[in-house]
Image (cartoon, rainbow, N blue to C red; front, top):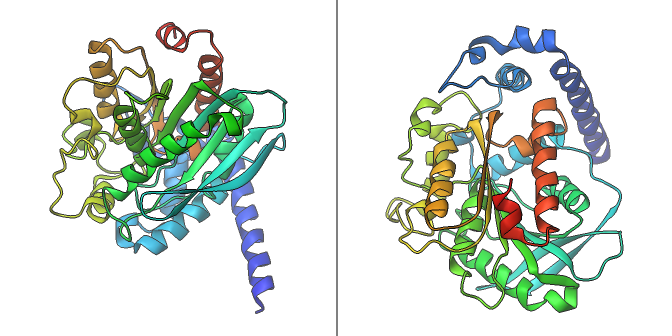
Length: 365
């Protein structure tokens, strides 16, 4: 079989799988039939039927657990899963790749710019998830393009170094450097320095919180931090880590696998750059949109971080999608529940970034 034929067959199989899964997840009867034990209440919450069905489909497809894979295989597996589940890329956004001098090497940013003409538009530095080990700008391409389109903002997706090839603290070093470079280039790139946000999901949410903490005294600091089901406590001490340790995509076994590759056995898991929730006061005075899923083991640390920020007098919107799982923004192309949640998230970002007073807009949500 020629390489071109193999690629064509692979794409055909992916499209068949995507079409079949989309039809199943749009059928309430099929979702109810597939839901199984996940239809029961946990921590006072009920899982969205389409996600319960998607979890069952993943079981039936015999997807290997991430902890059984090498980092390279896990990256390939995530990329394929996202191709199956992601939204289509919008056609009203242009993208181009930029390079800047990072702490140890050249790093890449992919810029997404809406075609609507506007000078000094809001901007978002987006830091992708993937447990510090997997994920890249290609995996998040459609999500970031749609965020730029809906939020009417320039989005810059960072291709930071990954573990285990580059261990902690390479990742926070890269992210802080990216923020400072982007802030220094605001005029050149046509950005409004008073409306620049840092955002990320999962591991990227953790790194975004680190950026907000470490640049809070900079001349150009984040006007907003957007933390999507963030990893904020590497000690895994909150109750949701136990009640949701298995069965909802992100498991305790996979969290341990990610942290082992990222931080290794000797790093203090309570270090503020690994566990922003445990950072000593003062907390950064950066308004926050924090999104969590009710069926995500990281749920409780997101709520705890919101509570710490509130005590420090920071404007916070703590939004739990009680029927969602970890990773839902990458499932919006295949399942109705994640699509609704992701649409709400992006619309709120647009509303806040364009408000006359960002902190007041967050506080009023």
